[in-house]
Image (tube, rainbow, N blue to C red):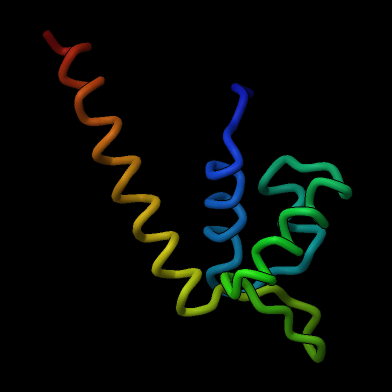
Length: 89
């Protein structure tokens, strides 16, 4: 796997949490160690991008998290497009 930026990892976590997901599944889907996972979950929770539901033990995306995820995807599409054109030329 290529080196990923912090934004790539955060986006991967947010994408995983769209419908609600336990901590262990996020760890596997985002390819993170437990200590890395805890660091990212704390950061995303503090910035109100994820919320933890104590009764179900699931992490879920907040409205703000969904907006950030959509913006991140749009940015990736804009940044990838010029490279795709070069490859075709």
